[in-house]
Image (cartoon, rainbow, N blue to C red):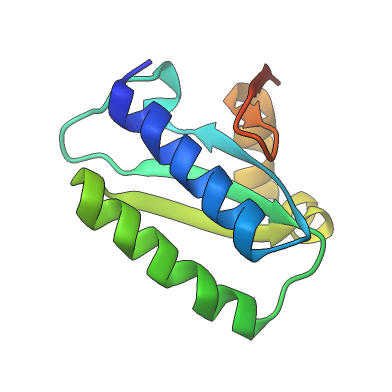
Length: 111
């Protein structure tokens, strides 16, 4: 796995654990799921939380911006509750079929 992708997952997991008690883990999907950075492609991630509201989203985006700037990457993050995730059929089907799940500690578990 690319060092930058590993670092993105590590930093996101750490920041989300620190800032959100209801953080449940994340999925890496899309072209970067192979662990490599691809020119002109975002690192696509679904982050799961028990609760979702506008204030949480407002707290998430500065975290993403900081990581993008620090690591010089582009992250496309989809923050969901489990129900919201399951109801977004386009994303859900792709992620479940091909994504890699990382628990709140950033440890991968093949889906």
